[in-house]
Image (cartoon, rainbow, N blue to C red; front, side, top):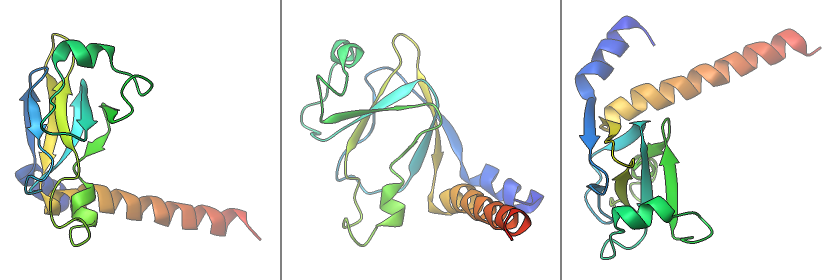
Length: 139
């Protein structure tokens, strides 16, 4: 990504802090943003009317709560709506709650343009690097 692209990304993203147990978004909300977890962890869950408590989150595993998924630092959430807006009717498919014990979770909030610049550009770069590698190493 060139410097003008990076400047544009910085204009479009925002770092947000969520306390443990705080809702980041609910299922069926309008999907205006995708989020990258920077610090801490968040849980995706399927039933917005059944928000898990902080004490429940500390005990959760995929074995005990298969309807919940933990997303740790580096993970993306809410981005699937940008890729399949027409398919899911333009709404989030899960709800998400922050959890990081006593510490807040930090997330990078990005709109569709920022998501495109960050994720798509990275994907395209990796594809180009693979192509170069195979051309250099295969007969």
